[in-house]
Image 1 (tube, rainbow, N blue to C red):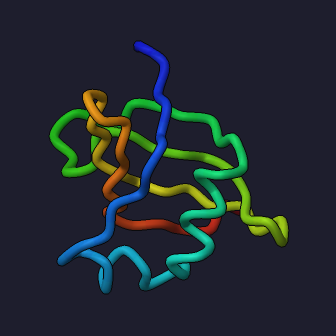
Image 2: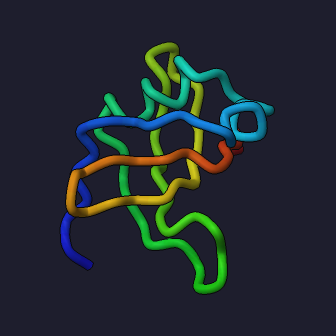
Image 3: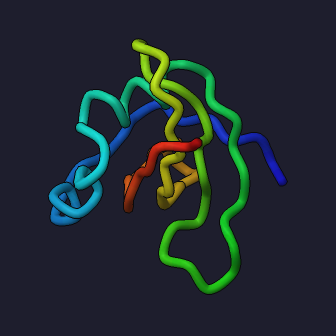
Length: 82
């Protein structure tokens, strides 16, 4: 997998669903805190997963669509890791 580099998190029509279990700020913090990136399972809406933590240390996984051309992430959903 080519390296994932997220420079901008995009928000849009999916924001309400994406923030059911984590806030906009928490999701953006995960991307800013050098998460581990993984390719998501085939057939899923989200192409990648960001596995990391918020500034407060809350462990989160963020499922997102990655655009490699402009290095953007469009969050689909997020959940707390146990």
